[in-house]
Length: 471
Image (cartoon, rainbow, N blue to C red; front, side, top):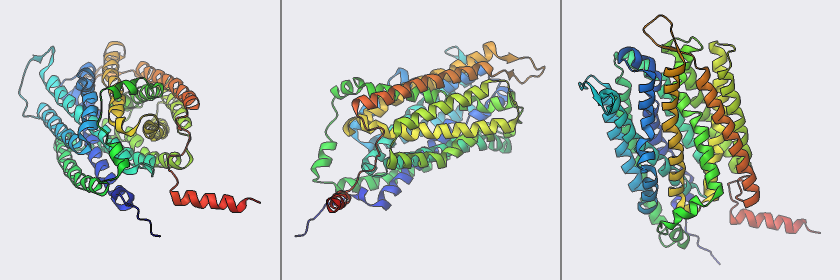
């Protein structure tokens, strides 16, 4: 008797890894713009007369609409109701609009003088563009997460998420390492932003190609009852189910604390290298760039480890411990030389690979697939509170408590207090990671279990081996 099994397009390795390459490239293009201004902080101060508070205000704009207008949560609901194609394309358009406004504000085209809403007009318009971009890139992030779950469920999901994050971190590395050389070569601070605008156009084209493949996946699953169940319409009461989950809140808190100790740090890391470690501004961005370059290899490695061996909660604990050690070393007044900063940054890269590689693939073990879009959106919303508030806090602390009179027109800062703040975030992240591991033991989420599921054939083969082995 011949048993016919309906094959989904996602069962094809070539198809699902091609999809991953397309959406990961789109996120890479977005992450270049996310951090393109970080190495330019000294140039903004010297050429455009910004101060640290204004820079912190601009950086905090990333989360304005996501946090205060709940755009991320709305985006998650739209994702669950309208699907990944509509939401992803809308996100790409928002990223383009935000980038264009940001480029206009920083370029020579901008001629507005005076203030807007109590801030320098240029700072406010650039912040507005960054806020619109933030809605697009964060919504794209939750969309890509759901795309990976959709195409890799029961397969190499953590590895796929790790590779996607690694590709996105490559965008961060490019932003940190090439922004100053590009701005210097073209003698324009806006030149790196124009480069990002071009890259986002290419990223939109890549996502359009993905949409064609995703339609084919729908066609290949037509009539499959399991898939029909997975696409059950989203209901508002699903939000109540999500927010009542203790495991969900522990993941969300770990996310905001961990990322608040990393991404806002990267916004100031180049300035830290200049002020504490005496690195030349033209080269200072290369040291923070080590962090995302390191994650390119390590995040997929740890994701693959989680897929095959499990121990997701344990991985998150180890990552939080390393984060504390890194920021503590940056806080202490020891070995203020470039090579020591480089070594510490490498360790931070390992920590930055450990936690996300286990954290994001753990969410589908806690929340059902039809609610994943909203669940990821809520987590990203909580994360954006930190990404919005922490940079503004650090900028204010630098201007208020950490200025050093060095006898020049270029401001100098003592970074001891800001790095102490980042260390505290790491300590809180460790506490939450330990609580999450305890909750996993109680509720049986399976965070310590492998992600890859055995096929029916493999299970039958294992069962037959056990039967033969019986006396």
